[in-house]
Image 1 (cartoon, protein in one colour):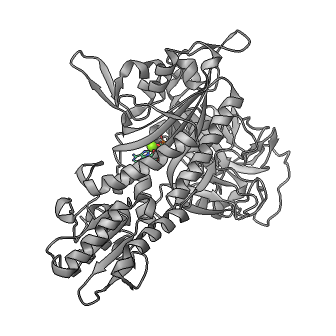
Image 2 (cartoon, rainbow, N blue to C red; image 1 turned 60 degrees about the vertical axis):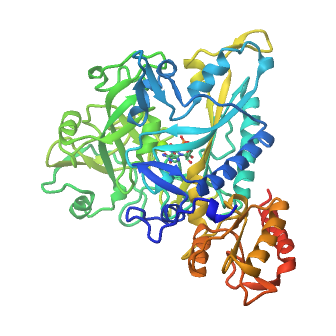
Length: 611
Ligand code: ATP
Ligand code: MG
């Protein structure tokens, strides 16, 4: 390819809204252009890298994950989402539309429903299972806050695989094949990946694993055990830690008290800090009580404190409460993790209640919410009660009366959990539950995800097959996703310098560029000869034949990030300059052997990335 025939569209400055390296460089190098908020066009240069990335995923999913590519439509009937129940629960991120016949349509945010329907309709016997299909296709999610360019776009490309399996063992196998494929894909892309498990790996059963890259702009917080042999790494939304004791100000474990609960007037004591001063005690002796508003919980809370007030909606995918409330109790030095709380409550979301709601469900304003007087179910964290045993004694808590706290509180004597669960936010400094070492944290960005879905969709969407024993059974499912654009951006985020992108060979838009200082005379001849040799050898070359100053051409090629530059200048002939993008200095080589050397360079670079 010659630049005169190609669309090179570089920018000296990135638009001000681009704040991270990959976003700036994708715009500056002419990889993407913004069309609207969260909407990016790939220009021809960017598309070359994007297709290579897709091809790597395709090869590994075909060969390692033993999957087959299919291509569902992007626009799908709303009916299939109504069947699964997600028409209601996906929320505002799902873009819905109506066609001319007034039928509900969905712009696919993901494709579990489409896969399930397509496989269901032809499925009769266990002999047809497992089915293992994937697509690499457009997705749309109406993200509230699209940002960082294609890292979190509204329209994006996802590689998404789905398996339907006869039983858990078969799902396990599919899951492991994909896991292996993921490691190979990221190796080929030169990305160091942190696999983050949702469970310890030892438990089996329903599992999930996120593939993260460490990144200061990451949306996720990772909790990591420093002990490499242990290898525990978890997303803070799922992480758990070893228990630590409640201790008083002197560092002693408090003992159980027989004293009855006592009301203490605490005027002007609102916060935990106020309590520390007033009671001259450690927050590890206080029980924090928080009223949460719970959205779309599918737990059955019939008979629970306050539950008679809530509407329970009938739904084929499982009945649920559009709105309910809980009071969360946790040791006051700890924070509630809302993702863990939402998962515990099988809810789509939890939010701290507003002042009026707190008054309604606690009888007192925030700060005085009490475990004994709450008018909604108690969700008690493991820091307060665990395995049927109180973890705190002689504690201090809100009284449920404005201006008062209570002392001598004994969990299980004075209140009992409606739900006892782990909802604390694990932090740096907490201890690993597997090996006891002290956790550190890192910001991470999720590039991919593998997930055992179990019977969620096959149940709600009524998929059955005749099992080996001749009885009808519901298959189990797995899903496997990689964010293609986000991965591409992450590669740039990791591989750049002040001049621009430094592509790994596997996804570089061109493998080699040839820059003649002037495209005429002997320089043109030499450049053309090398170009021909390389092209014949199947190397992807860009020859910069533009009538521009050499400085401009160098700057563009460096910005675009082509891994190798061969510069042809009459000063150096019969030698040419050989300069890997990542090397500080150029090397002079005879023009005659430059092509062979470049071919070897490309081979070596690709070999380094071989999985
Ligand atoms: P996130 O937590 O970042 O929103 P997710 O859990 O919603 O991700 P999945 O539903 O598991 O993502 O989708 C699979 C992959 O698709 C993600 O790992 C990510 O790489 C990519 N992805 C998800 N949302 C976006 C987006 N808005 N823009 C670009 N890529 C995305
Ligand atoms: Mg998301």
